[in-house]
Length: 223
Image 1 (cartoon, rainbow, N blue to C red):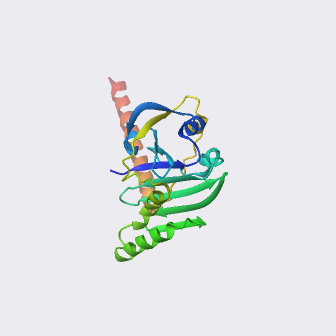
Image 2 (spheres, helix red, strand yellow):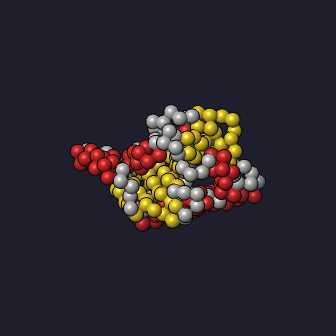
Image 3 (tube, rainbow, N blue to C red):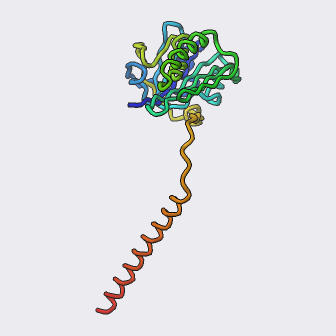
């Protein structure tokens, strides 16, 4: 089963203020992050970060982090672990400006900005594995492992209890989310000959159906 989730981490904003700012409210349920999120959940790591977890992908976009980033550095992560092309991204924003960003699609890695020191050892370890086994996309673990190092949170390992959240009816933040599109490998080009054959097939089908209807009408008219 593939997972397409995302999370936001803040350190300098109490959970109550975070929920009020985003227009979210607790439902009374709790569980581990991936199970509690419907569509959101929140929990606090031992490292002191408050995590807002979502059961959909795309929170790691600067437009979604602007208000939060005025209260300190915000780190956000998206990940899709589908078998064909796993992808992920991580971004750090402060005062509305992107400090650094990581994008991974399969075995392709792109970065921008001054990355945190923890990135280097993680990258080198996973690159060594990638060199030995190039058919496995080890780089996909970079945002996951970096989130563990920076915030003390990994969605696949954390046993921290998260409290389920739902958006309030007047949640402007939830209603105006910009869900970042994940890059993917280009689709194979569609053959123009196949398009022509498809169009001809549709034309022939409608011609046969129309002709059948015509003869049916003639049959009833002769009665």
